[in-house]
Length: 255
Figure (cartoon, rainbow, N blue to C red):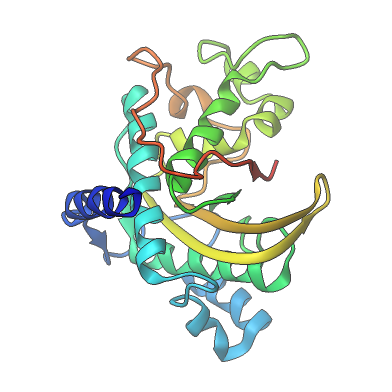
């Protein structure tokens, strides 16, 4: 019975996502790099195989990857709407870049940012279960705004430019900043699955889905924060999420 209910829910959500457009237009100009630069980096690492890794979903299926990707983008755009900034457009080229990054993390077993992190905005997350992975990754990123800094305070959207762009603040809340930065225009998401991972802060992780997010243009480094990080115009809330069996499992994001 539970399997039938899950299939009905997923079918309903799939129909809802069917109108989600994937842009193939030229990417918005990005001062930090270009697609050519980024492809060169991946070619250097994997040779001609890199093109296959942009469309494969290591350890999982295209259907699962598509579900998580769409769920994540919808959740990201919900959080952006709280700050009255434009919704991000899903872009095919960024999906490719996010997917090769997800596959790269699985193949290397090393949970770390990729070699193109300085070209685009990049968030990465591990989830035990693919169900809800897109939602929960965005939730974890947004929650960084509520982390207490060394002075016991959350992020101050009404601070001065200097206060808002303080390097310690940026390091503490980098995923959230990537997600709600006003001038970001496009997004891509990759999904893969691996048996084990290692990261320098937490050691080993077993059996996780990797959710990778690439955004363009990359947010500026320690500049133009007042212009691009706007206070909420709506009270903070969580979108209702249907909890499915075995969904509530530990996850991890990389600081």
